[in-house]
Amino acid sequence: MTRPEFLLSRLAGIGTAMLIATTAYADDVTLRFSTAGPAADFLAKSMESFAEKVAAADVGVTVEVYPGSSLVRQGAEVPALQRGNIEMSTMSTFEIAAQVPSMGFLNRAFLFDNYDQMMEVMQGPIGETLHDAVASDMGIEILSTAYLGSRQLNLREVKEVSGPEDLEGVQMRMPASPEWLLLGESLGVSPTPLAMSETYVALQTGTVDGQENPLTILKAAKFDEVTAQVIMTSHLVQPVFYAMAKPAWDAMSEEQQEVVKAAAVEAAAENNEARYADEQKVAETLAAGGLRVDEIDLTPFREKADAVYSESDLAKEWDQDLMTQIMGN
Image 1 (cartoon, one colour):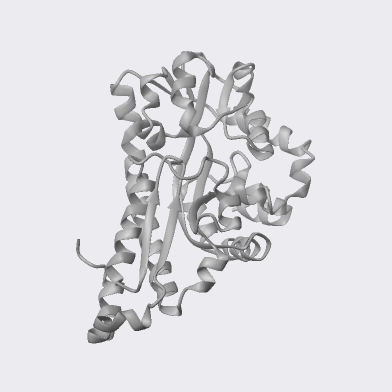
Image 2 (cartoon, rainbow, N blue to C red):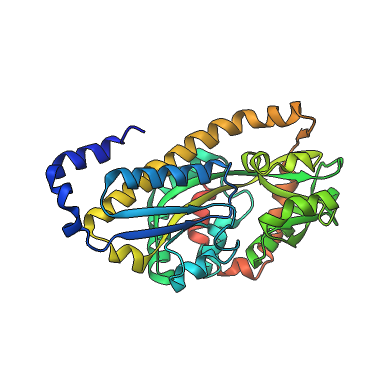
């Protein structure tokens, strides 16, 4: 694999000094990087690319990638980071909101209109505010922002859906947290807490009526084998973060930090480019495979979400000013 330019320039300056790296990097660092995403998904692939980039720099850092909750179960990654059981994980805005409630607005249905708007926000002043809050309140360093995709509704049986009232009673798989339950309520479904790793069988057996995920993840997890319909709601344009326990980050040398940070930014960008491109065509692929894909008027869903959030005690903890800045764009 060709070394990225940012690493080549660094290595050129280091030269023969790398031959005596045992002195500079007497304490080699191993970063265990966990994600719930399946190995076939773009995010896990970008994590493997990240590991390769870090290894190519030869600065005494090794990254071990654990996709599909193979090291830490979904929902336990952030506590594992904070206890020092692992050094890195992918981290969602839902996990952030559990400990920094003011940032809960990032989990609001229909907050972002599209990928470009989401990335602009995450790379701007609001993103900086988020990074600072996570570092100070959670002891976690955000290294880069990846695009997880735009989440769509996915049902195991075909339903005629024109608004949230048509989804009343639908048992929709979602991760277990108050923010996820509120999101489900805002869509009109009955949210059912369930780990990602258990979702395929639950759909297959009818334990749940559906799930909601970006189409790229739906395809990678093979949910199209056990479902019949996709409703294109794009209710959550979702970022996910490369996250590192701050003690692990602080323990690295400045050079190691620079390499790890740069590799994380580049690997996340690879995920973003690949996922966004794939999203543009995966709906056609799923439809060609027999899945019904419905484009509908989202006005009733937006109105339902507005009503639910306006009455939610959870939403009262959100930073309304930051949310208004985003939704006013």
